[in-house]
Image (cartoon, rainbow, N blue to C red; front, side, top):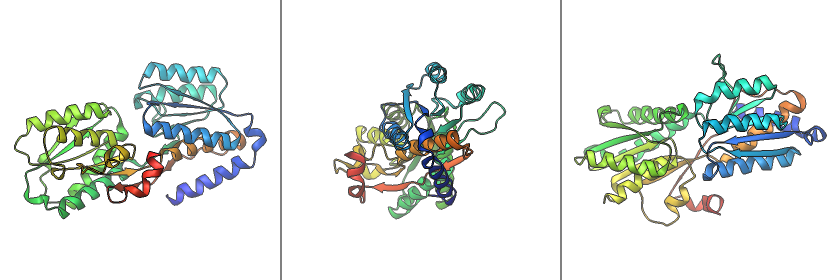
Length: 324
């Protein structure tokens, strides 16, 4: 946890806790883009628990990547009298639209997971991860395994599995690439292949399968992506194509598929994940909104979470928490 976050949240929680009577009159709305995904299930649960702790009413809506439903839900929540809104946008291009609507209604807005801006380009307050930094942690870990397992003498291809409509996802991939190349300077950047996917595991399997078929000369594959789904999908594509698990090397982000990857105890090309407790994101967003509403505390422009690296070796330490 950064010092910035620690100090900011301490102030926010102290302010909110000091005004329980006012908090009981507050209603917080939470809009998320993919409510059936484990990441967002935990995130919304964390937000709801924090609202209950602070005595605020809580309503949420899953918009399933539907831009029209996102705007309609925002308008409905405003019409229903919410006092603050946290939102995970399905597309960052919606940012100026939802920010303008919330501003016009006089309702504080905080973006979660995906950062957005107002029409003039100024940032909407944000809770989540520092995308490039967490990508760099992935790249550094990939490079360490690459060196430890002697991949330098093999026919290696690196696949950047990219959700190009989400800037935060592209920053994660860019951070991973930069850190890997910095730590493995002899690797030829021309061997990095870039493929687009739609942020789902099914599509990652499809695009990785196509990539494997197009490059039969490669013996070993390294890959990184926006999230666990992108990486686990690539690992499963390799398995389906008959590659041994040791021929693949991928590290995810978010921890949502750690149970799928490590729970069965079988070796996998999915070597690890940078786990972020998404419940904290939801809770932090609600705490900030309640503080802003009850005593006028300014919403912090950025509140970041730090990851924990989970792999097959330490998975048992996290299993009860992630898979219970």
